[in-house]
Length: 96
Image (cartoon, rainbow, N blue to C red; front, side, top):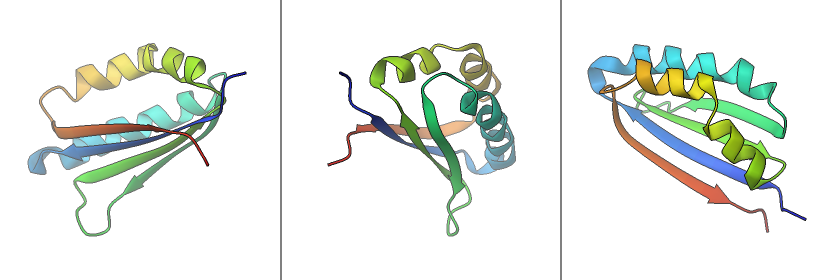
């Protein structure tokens, strides 16, 4: 049986694109929470550096998270923020 998966994704917007990236990230929350396998999908913005966003996600398993990674609303986000994101770091984690 597959283990529950936690994702920590760090997105840093270009300084002149913070509001664009923030708006597009917010659009991901509602449809993602409705996806099969999504336990939690929390978006945070750094208090010191508003260009930094963190998604803290919990999924039933890696397979269902991978389906999420191939959905249309994520593709729409990628298209809308092309050239607006300075860095993206994703960690796949398992609770111990």
